[in-house]
Length: 391
Image 1: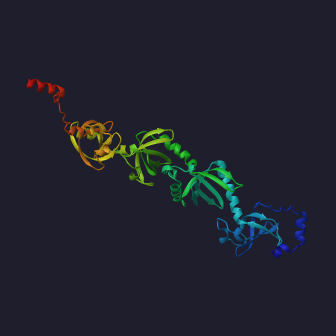
Image 2: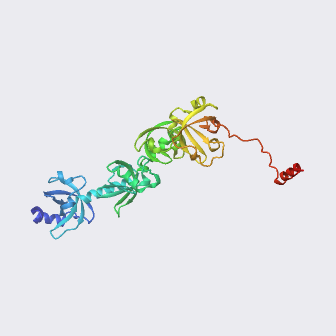
Image 3: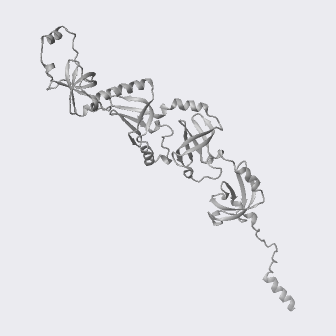
């Protein structure tokens, strides 16, 4: 203990006897102290003239790096983790003091609903983890904003984890939605942090409006697009005017994209990519008139017929009844995928994007023998005739 504090004097006695009562810090309290000396990673501090405290080891390391620039006479906050020990020192902690200040800040933020920014530290299949001053925060997948929500087919856990791991190191705006100080945990929400902004943007949206966004997920039935905190779906039927086999071929996560709003139902937003391009079926009505013979390539074979691609976004259907004059049950016996064929246009409806084709119309109808064979005479009658001639 420093000599100045160890040696008694008449003045000290007078202060002890008649001065104000000295309050000894309680275990677990946060107090302000003054640095007396620093040696290595140990800090000796004066606890307001009441006692001397020692901060050492990992307890001298806090998130702000206080020890690095510390000097004698500086006043710092410390947390009491052990009362006076055998050496006469109170054991204090800068690390715990920093955590306590952070906890108090988080509690205030939780009560006021303030939005804070955190950096993603880890990821697991359930969500994202952050660590601030040793305090852990968790953002469940369900609390992620559209741009970061891991949309994958079949909720594949491996793919979800892969998507989430790409967010490590990313700064993220969140709100604290639950506090467990005893367990040292926070539950955070990115979705809640952006909710006010989302509602404001939602109010301004209108049918037919064009917006720029980012692809946030691609699944079998379409493409999700995030924009201004919102998310909408481009259904597979709205990706391109022609038939779309696989939405994955039209982009990847993170790609910028321009879309048109075609429907708004509450938070559900329907989008379209194809409607930002001219409808090729308008010209198709002029080009593919009924009776015209066209060439195309077999694109798909279904139970009810064969689809033939005539150009990039125009396909026609040959119904089973139009494949041949005879009854057709297995169309794959008549045509193959990729086969180039000729067909006759028998119907077109540009408004419904339908074009009817026929191979049967190009085939000669089967020949039927209309002559009836003369009935063969009964053998008994023949015998009677012979006998009559003999007579």
